[in-house]
Amino acid sequence: MKDSGLGRARDMRRIEHGLFLAAGVLVIAGALSDSLWVLGVGAWALIAAGLIEMIYRP
Image (cartoon, rainbow, N blue to C red; front, side, top):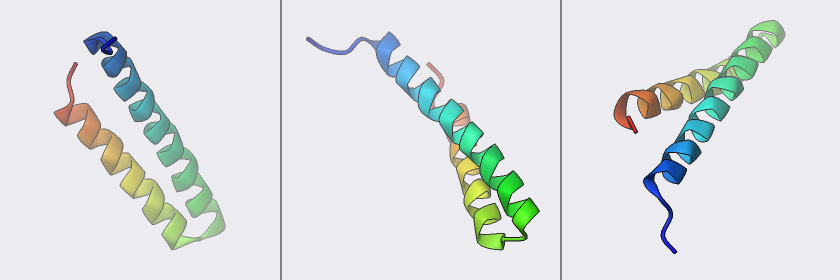
């Protein structure tokens, strides 16, 4: 049985929201601990979530 388009859209939304949440946590943790690499990883997670939002529109 093939996965419906609605199921894939739900999965992409879940990934996108997870990336936004991870980005927020990592950026705050990096800023509080003065750790530039943690801040950078949070920025890349935010970029990935933004790209998913812009490119993949269910």
